[in-house]
Image (tube, rainbow, N blue to C red; front, side, top):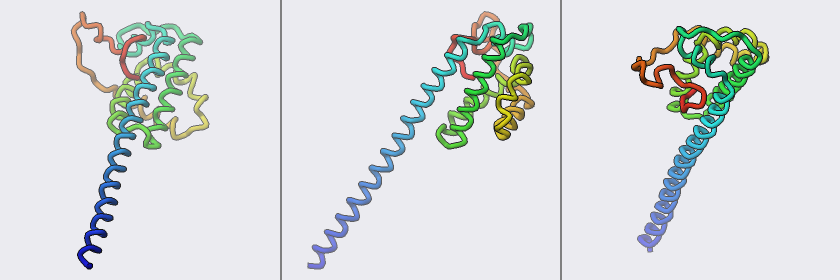
Length: 172
C-alpha cells in the first residue's frame, strides 16, 4: 500500500515539474516572439520617419564633411519625430520590453545619429518639447555629448559608406 501511495505522489510531482517546464518554455518563446514583433514594428516606424527626412540632411548628419542644409520647418519636424521615436524606444527598454541585446544595437545607432551635426543644431529647437521629461533630456544630452561611435570605413564606391540614408534599411 505504501509503495502505491509513493508512486502516486511521485507521479503528481512529476506532472507538476513537467507542467512547470512547459510553462517556462512557453513564456521564453512568447518573449522572443514579442521582441521580434517589436523589432519589426519599430523598424517600420523608423523607415517611415526616414522617408520624411530630407536626404541631404540625413547624409550631412551621417557624414560631417557634407555641407549642412539650411534650417527649415521640415527638418525641425523630422528631428522632432526622430526624438519622439527614440523616446518611445528608450522607455520601452527601461520597462524591460526591449531586450538588452536589441537595445545595444539600437543605442549605438541612436548615439551616432544624435551626435551628428544636424541633430546637434536641431536639438536646440525641439528640446523644449521634452522639457517635462528630465530623465529623457539627460539621456539625450549624454548621447549628444559623447564621442561619436566609430564605424568601419567603406570604399567610396560602396553605397553604404555614407551610412543609412532615407529609404534604406539602416537603424536610427
